[in-house]
Image (cartoon, rainbow, N blue to C red; front, side, top):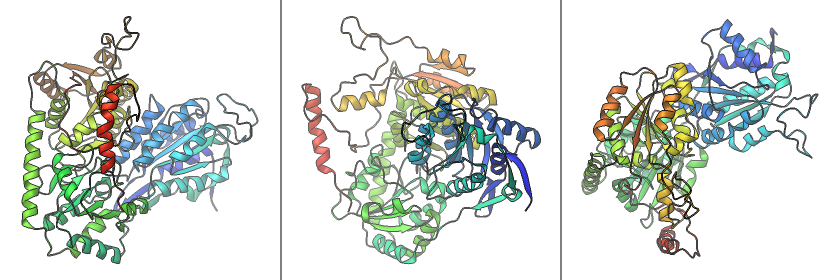
Length: 625
């Protein structure tokens, strides 16, 4: 057997550079690059190996420098999402805080079912120099390191304590990363001494390897049960989740619903499964949904979920689907999700499932009266959207106006990116997608700080598209550092920074549960009250963005925002447009509920007042059995 003498770090990177994925005959690199921040744990291992690979085989695994370990995982996750989970990036860190900074990113990737490879350094496997710098000393488990924090938030975890273990670890990680049902964060902890240790590796490990991503075909009997349930329905509704987009099933979905007349509501991850204006598209569904989709959901007798996890936002905390005897058909590549709500479970690829269901439903169509009702709901909501995004001429822009302006700037090929706060709700309801890749909102983990890093990942994955990042001031302050990476790599993203001097979303939620927006505004501590209710802080986020190297515009009106968005088209590097908005002007209501408990006893009258509507919402909650 032919072997090559390499360090563990060199062998790991040689392996990554040789991996490809394939679906439907289309091949692409599985790992298109590696982000890394170096410290004493990996500078002589992964760092040396990346340099060597860059010099000897330029372009096979591009190294990019990040500013924050959590952010680089977000960038990798966004990259994978934009590539329909067929390609991803690796992320390498030192041991200690560099490694644990990635834990939040790992959780986000796993919760959203997005493939990312994490390569944190680890303590000396030999323990020759222990306790080393940054080592967690567990009194009864000497083998525990801070990297064990990755175990519950990774779909795959291994620690390579000997060079002989590397091949199994790499192959195991790649298996999970290319499995649509099991994918998420794959973590391989690499002790710093082992990274630099040489070994005779089998040359076969570094040969070109193609991972076939299959389309599992559903069981015929479950398909027929699903078709029977749909045929018996008078008011069916499809809920399209992220699986529709990841499996490239949007055309199959359109063909099915055009033939049957079934309306389609979309989750956050599934938004864009049908383009805006499609006759069967009724928009967002759930707690952040449209009144149109939610009205139809409330009366639906058969609900067909395709590629959705059925989160609490999608079901409005299990109050949305409230018709007597409502039944569920859950089509998903993951058994965990297909089995939810104890309906008809159809386990298989979304596209394969939709194509087969279309054949089984041939000749069947919903009643004309139901189609007319769907059209009325769609038209009524379109009018709501038009009013919400139209310029008001007020002293401050509303967030809905900002969404409308960005939507117009996106056109047919732009992408909007967002993650946390009130923006995902307004975008879910108001943004009008041109297709499945025009809407990129991370809402599985709703992680503040994802936005700019995520926008960078989207642009790296789709350089031909214009990327517009919508971020609130709270999220911006948590993680704006990757603007520097965008400057360094000359990556063009347009960041629309919505400044409302605090947390607009949580402020509104706080008010709704009787907590009076406590602790949600950026204000001085008042000498009179001793509380944080003084004047607004003089924070200049535009100046901050400029100091990081971005081109900055300020927009105080709808006209100025339009001018800034147009001017940004001609800029080369990252652009930040700062817009001050009024946090007290909400977007249109979804007319749905979300379960956020209100204190059962309180001296505050506002809290007591909020408890009654909460109890009314709880009374509508039901198990879907």
